[in-house]
Image (cartoon, rainbow, N blue to C red; front, side, top):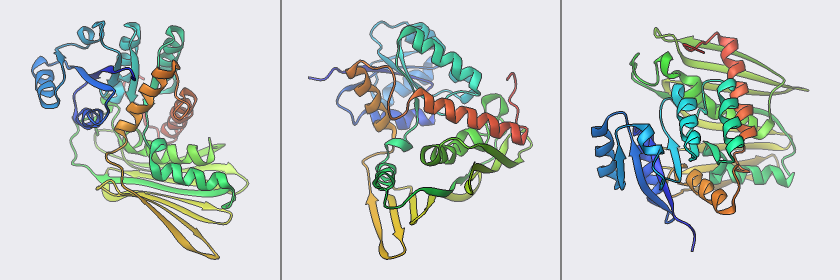
Length: 327
């Protein structure tokens, strides 16, 4: 019988609600504890989702000897602080993206996890999605040749609130870290790290980017064009232009995903997938599978991938002169 893991939620915000709903789908996950700086908020979240315990401080929760693994859902600006707190208390960690504010923070996180031989993973669910896996399988078959160009976008219209998480620079707000990371993941997954990067952005009055356009140059005529915006309903999609055709990835709000494979001499192949939930249970499953096998890194989302992503995000921020306070 597989081990049942006691999960803790650090930061009961909107994304933590989605993650907790995903945990309920997994038989080897126990909704054990939730912590907030407000005990009333923690209590309400625990009642809503059926957690065993709730705490009015993060320190109290991570000190619980029965807690196995913590999902960190606090704002980007606090990811390093909260990850280190968990690791210092010998807890395994799944940390929401973006992993941290910059590469220096990620290095501190990964160094402590390595030193203590604890599991640490960034909660990236695109690599686990069925449409993503389908595209990778098509490319691995060789019939499409190499990827020559990527066009990827993620956009939705967010109400402007300069104090809210999305637009507050002190919380690591802006389009890049919140949704621009997804096109960056696509580019790195399918083409690797770029040799050079250019970027342009439009800023809000609060000082963060609400729209950003990124060009990644891989040499030999290979490029990626990435776009993210909190200012329009552009949706989500990625196109991979290959030697022998085009692979198009998309998903809709009802969880339906598609992978369309088009070549010049054949009818397009349309593969549709509709998973039971968003990617949150998939990343939780990966964490528990790794712990079952006694490994402290995921082979699907290794720490090296998170380093490549944060280094790319740092390079983009430098190009658009986006600076967060105290970094």
